[in-house]
Image 1 (cartoon, helix red, strand yellow):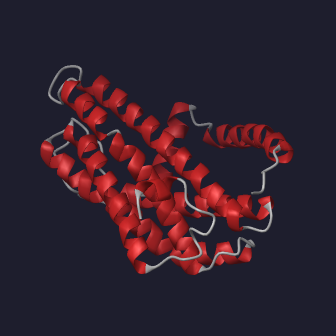
Image 2: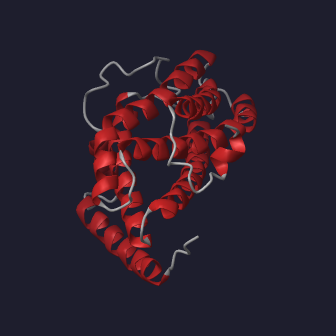
Length: 252
């Protein structure tokens, strides 16, 4: 297996998923995430870089393992014609592509960490915010590319475009929900300048990712988080519905 086959898989890519191929794809994912993870934490300290290099692959492993049964069931029930092993391999390949993109950006993000104002400088707070935003955009770009790749793989196997879309969205919802909580438990990743470097927070199981987001939204909106969420959902539905209705996925 080479990298090209991962980026542009053949139509029968998921039909034959031997253990050896799965191991190679997993190794690519781990290597890319470790390289990128080190540059994410390096701005705070080299030790933080090592911590994040370990935690990023761990985050993906926990998400895939804990959701393996659910993803397999959803793939079967929604008519994708993928079994449990094929569903797992499809998602692993998707994560590996995202890791490959992030790993290729590691030299750039490493230089960014080296040239950003240090954590003990007066501009540390501003630097931390800009640093976090930059990495968020990079991760979002890698994630979108990986999801497009995953949709193409599903399109090769699902009997209808609707089945491919339903499977994709269900997988994204389940993995996103669980992955967000695991990222909360495994924090920190970027390393706040005001806190000591640590592998985990002293209270990693206290609270949830969603409580934190809700509290932040409630603070920003002046106590109107519920109204803000309702408006956002309605706007998203209004934008997405015409696109999903008019778009036609081409069959190979």
